[in-house]
Amino acid sequence: MPDRARSRAGQLGTYLVLVLGALLAIVPFVWELSTAFKSLGESIRVPPVWLPAHPSWRGFTMVFDNAPFARQFANTVVMSLCRTAGQLLLCSLAGYAFARLHFPGRRVLFGLFLSILMVPSQLFIIPQYRIMQELGWLNSMQALVLPGIFSAFGTFLLRQYFLSLPNELGEAAELDGCGPLRTYWHIYLPLARPGVIALGVLTLLWSWNDLLWPLIVNTDPRQMTLSAGLASLKGQYLTNYPVLMAGAVMATLPMIVVFAMLQRQVVEGVASAGTKG
Image (tube, rainbow, N blue to C red; front, side, top):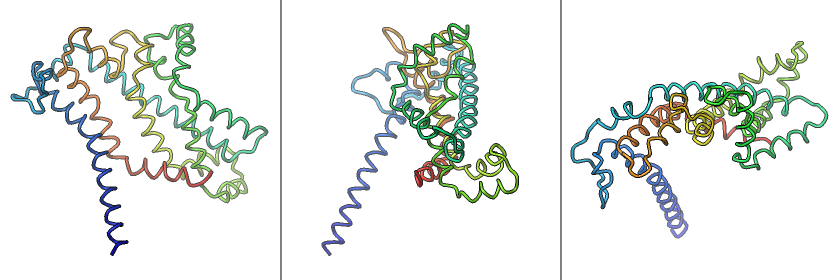
């Protein structure tokens, strides 16, 4: 009995922590959704009002009046898809090379590659901005896309996944006359599908939510992404929170749908990538 009681107490404590964590994640979104339907007065009232007295869609319509929301949505979709496609191609090639190809200095080069993860990404902003400026790419789509198609984390993730696959597959392909590139494309890449999907979803979420770089490199409202465009809705002295939250809801929903559809593949891919070092 004492052991069973301790086990139940441990389970209860675990469930309590999980419930608190879920509330911390859900409550901000519920508040965002509720505020999107409030009036401006209700959104700044003290004490706060959880539910609007007269829900209104006016905040959603005003988003399109205050910003080129449709254009910014299209910019975000194009940027996120291009970044994701670029990372999947380059990271899978690099991960396969580090995992399956033997060349001098492979371990040293991979260690240097991973050292990028220890450097704050903010340190690269000024050099990247200067490069975009010299190329004349400010306020353009390529300025949003190109710096985001390289990822040390993505290379590490897929390298670990390729390492978890049997060596016999590559040896059999080599005996059949396949070169490294053909072996990568026809043998290893299809088997690494869960890891590729996991990286794709994580990259898509990161690209969709990226704020700092789009805010710096594109100052034209019609060339901004959703995150930067929503940030511009915040006023210096007064912010129309229903409009801001309505835009945030519309910007958040696509990623919620994507993650809900692919969450199993994301978990499987990340878990499998950590099974072999």
